[in-house]
Amino acid sequence: MTDHPVHRITLPSLFRDAWQLISNQYGLFLVLIFALILVAALSPLGVFLGPILGLIFASLKEKKNDGRIRLANVPKWLASAVDGLLAYMMQLASCFLFLAPSTLLLYYLGSNWQAITANLSVPGTALIATGLAVAPTITTIQITLCLPFLFTYCELAQGSNHAVDAIKKSIQITTQNPTVVFKVAATLLLIHLVATACLILPAILFLPLHFSVIYELHQKLRKQSE
Image 1: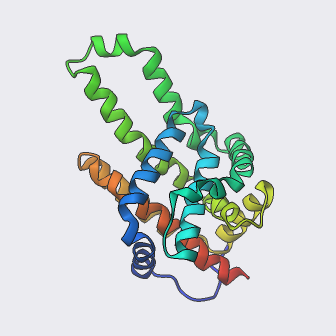
Image 2: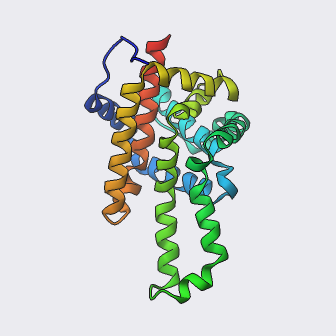
């Protein structure tokens, strides 16, 4: 596999474009994305992850097209929710180890909570707060590790693909541009891991830019493949 021989995409320009896309509504995106990914992480086997990723990328599409997002348009963002759920279930069958661990861990902790806290000196409320803060980052890392499916929900947000077609298109774009996709994904993962090690908060603050970078990368690679 070799990269598509079109315009070279550099990390600085990609991050700059991603920042410009969401910078004037960064706080809104932060609250929105953190809340949505947390809901996905807490859902059984992350079943809401597909529809929620569709929502996130639909909001980024609206920001790209209209210059701002409006929460009143959330029902419009839900247009691809069913296909998002179907796409996630298809992906779950082929990369279960990447997409489900955080939810399984949360349910294990919940079912064994008393036994776990009895052996620790840390207050239970502190553990819960830490878990809720870390869960969106862990889930985002898992999503990014699934490289062939990285652009599936970006494709669904375009409104022209169903679940199977979106997955196929994501795989096609990734295999045509393996070097740049791997480089961007590895950079995002490294930033998240370092930020999480720095007392979690920086990783939370990075969430909107993370998804904006993926969206911008998809837009650029999609144009090159047309």
